[in-house]
Length: 169
Image (cartoon, rainbow, N blue to C red):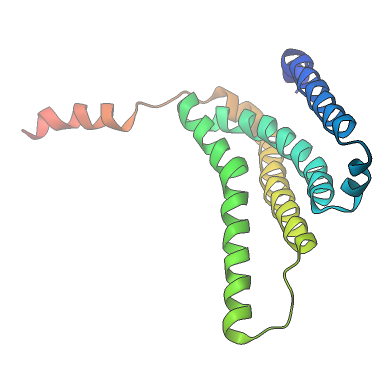
């Protein structure tokens, strides 16, 4: 994690500085309209993102380290991390919102779906999925690091298939 911070820390700080600059430019161009931003749904979404994205970034790094040791290739490890931390929370959140909408439509549940609820559900799903995979990866890295680091990558499936194929002919 220290190496990742050393390699990508300055780039992350530069991106944050650019985001702050864009926010400052937006608010200075709007003038008095920026006061309404604090009561708008975009402010609530920004607060949820402020909580969810750092956890997701830390999870990407830690789970990426674990997947890099477990998977046979770096490409497979990259796709597993992208699936677990990048796409799975979105899939779960979309499925949850669709199920909630369907239950309200057909079972007539009077629970209203507001912007605050949607943003809180989005942040909660991201935090839950990232925390689950982060805890699992951290536990396995802590308990089995030596055995994970000592593993040799086996032959790819297609190479094993090619070795078996001529003998079958």
